[in-house]
Length: 149
Image 1 (cartoon, rainbow, N blue to C red):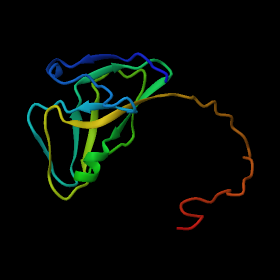
Image 2: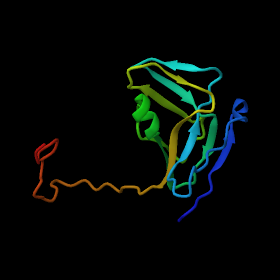
Image 3: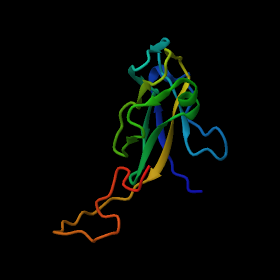
Image 4: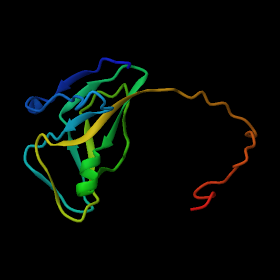
């Protein structure tokens, strides 16, 4: 398994929160913890920006991908609006997540609650070549359910 070094700085008010870590030896992502001063209530259908209290330095050639936690999704309908969210290697700002409540009940975010997970991935960059025509395939322009339901 390949490992990379991620430099991390905690926001001054987030020193009491855990540093992101892998829950098990087989975990792909690290947990991100809510850095809220007081409990934040998110009504059904509401979107809220929530700090996770960290700044990170990702090596060139990598990205961090932020994803919802499946337990919150199935039990409460909690997800992330821009899932997956991308953190580029040159971003040095505070890491925040955009939480949405798809559930039928209000959801309360508590300080230190695990709200999302972050996975690191290597990046492949595209070199675009403009052409007049593209190669033909059997599928061609078929999309959006063209093979049936």
